[in-house]
Image (cartoon, rainbow, N blue to C red; front, side):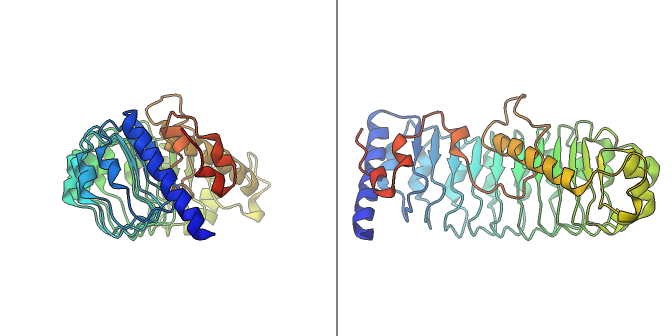
Length: 345
């Protein structure tokens, strides 16, 4: 049965590619097909602006695909790549790139050639460092490097003046560069689950910053009341599960400033202006997670796309093609596996 299914799957993939070539299509969706290699015909689809290859079994990316000069969107998340395909750096019109959930431990210096890149997701790949050359990606607005063994970030990231959304949750960072003070457009900063020992002082100088996640760190240096009051412009400062979170002074201040989230202390719940309960916090994070998922799906250029409401990034790894691809998905995807591959054009 598996051989029969594979036969239909392979022919369906080729039919999609041939159709895209014949119609000079702008978009080609080859995600979720269990492909171990990309059909050679794809390199002939020179009209492509968007190519979706996520959720497959790819171990390589053909170098000839670097000739798709018009390509603006490329998704390779959830594959089996063990190195970054250097030919991608020839796709100099690329605006959206997702390589999350592969086994890519390093990025080449040539990443700096992607000068119009606006969104880059590199979550859970084993990435050990970010290249300094990423400073050349001056249009980058969204950068996600969550779940990687990063111990530091390059100072050159301060050159990303357009950056609005940065998440490095679940890494091994002990600090962030002082150059982050130059990120004057930053709205969302997620450093949850790292090894920070203090609240980064640069937070006070970022005028557009609204959401900061420092929970699950090692913060034991208590900031002054004046320093925390300077952060009142933030919509959320999450300090839960840090050594300072249960200190009486911080608990008292959190009860007065609704934007500060700390662990709920049972002995302190009778204070006027009570600390937000964990239940309410979870409800809010869940609601804002849905907003962020919409933003991550390609709405970053729309000022009304809930940038300011997007918060949680702990489960965002894969690409949602519904936001990146304008085409309506074929109705056959709603039918059993076999029927997906017998659709005619």
